[in-house]
Length: 415
Image (cartoon, rainbow, N blue to C red):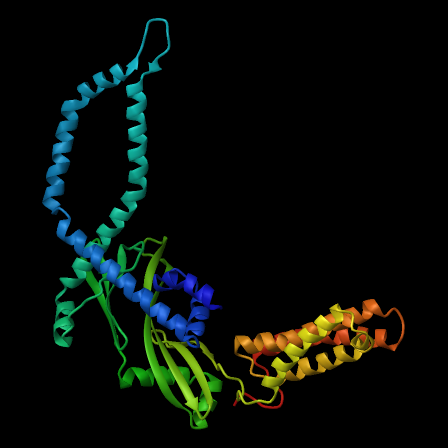
């Protein structure tokens, strides 16, 4: 996944609206891209600040439940009294003449337009108002819970996030992220029907949690082998996430139930090699495990890949200018590019985007050079070599794709 795609999906990632595949791709990209991690952190802080500000405003200016009940009763009473009057006004708006159909005057049009405008406004504003209302209620229920207050007081926490997940499951439950620090997370599960906190979820990045992350990651055969060679864990992080599962309820019907989980990240290092892993701490399994560096970046084939890339550009430009010398050796050149493309695909560093461009372009340039030779030479050995070189370049391009996607290294294994 590229930086542009990651930045576009950051908000959906934080709100838990992505598929498991998209989350894994973003998590994998974040592990190697400092810029996107900074963007993720900034967006998370901004959303938390925005939610906190909105909820404070609603809390301070929202009317009390008793006010709503009083207003509702007055509306009902006024409605009963005003019905005849309203009917009379409607009759005046629509003038009916004997023997003619009813026609609308300017007042009717004006009133109709205003009603339509207000209706459209309600459609767009009511959902937002209701969403903020349930978020405020969920936050208040969580903060009034004695266990939550005890934790906040014990840890001396000055600021609480009160980030409410944008969805309520079929049981009437939702989650409120109260604390989301780098080394500590506290989340409450709120039941709107009973207006109480049904469960608290908390995790601290202490030695026990780190060991749990290492133990789960160590179930991967490659990481286990890496640890046996003397690798050590150098970095840890914890995250939270949630999803909605279809569960058969007590009544036999399928209902959506929210499920919260914690994810742990660990980086293992040994000399210049490293291995990253993301594990589901709650359920005890590995989300993903991979190595960002296949072999040492000092491989001689890494600079050769870029040299061949530049050489291919120069040769194609020369052929476009109809250089007679190069025209006679296009077949040989295309075969050379096929061989070098295969070697660079095998041994150049594969997990960096710039190397991807520099490596994959070699067989592409070779196939273009060979195609020019086929077109310009109708007979002779050069045409035969051009056909052979073009075919080899196409095969090498496919092989390079396989090498890149699977991380296959023939002469130097990953570990």
